[in-house]
Length: 111
Length: 111
Image (cartoon, rainbow over all chains, first blue to last red; front, side, top):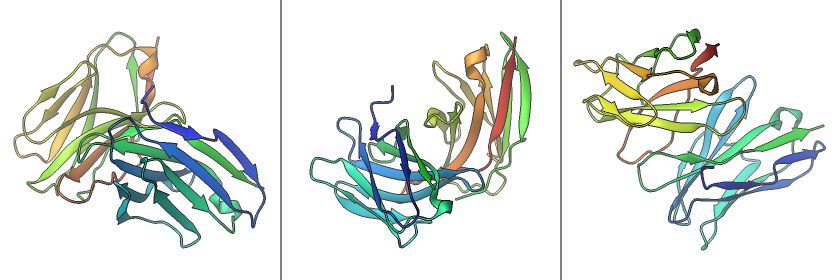
């Protein structure tokens, strides 16, 4: 158990819909990262938040957005969903530049 | 971040040492070598990291060549639970904390 929690574990939805994935970092970790893992793209970095502020963006689509709240939990919002958005979405947390601890992931299926 | 090259797959006998190579010939002086593993669709798990010197922890040892252009992760006594995809990642620890995952090495430990 990494100490990072993600909900929900599984999500099945239809194209065009909007979903929110939630992540709670380890106690004391100020950084939260979101990654997407699809069969054809592998593990891809999406976005990094540090203490409520966006720090870095990766290959995140404009239809996707994220935020980190004052209690440090983070949400990843995916809208206008397409079949290709089906993937595992992982959240990770860390203290500064140290090792990242990953959550168990949310498996999103878009039908 | 420097790119890494890993063999796509390797087998290992249970109880024997597993030596996983990684080439990172374009590594910069301020870049660290990180190793993570992912056991079947679980969240990636941090194993070890190093800059120049060899490192050892309870999970593994990391041997970095003197010119830092390659490294080897050593699992001293592989068990069936070590079957996973192992990722070698090179990353600077300054501003950008994201992890750039490649294809990794699929390690299968056989009884």
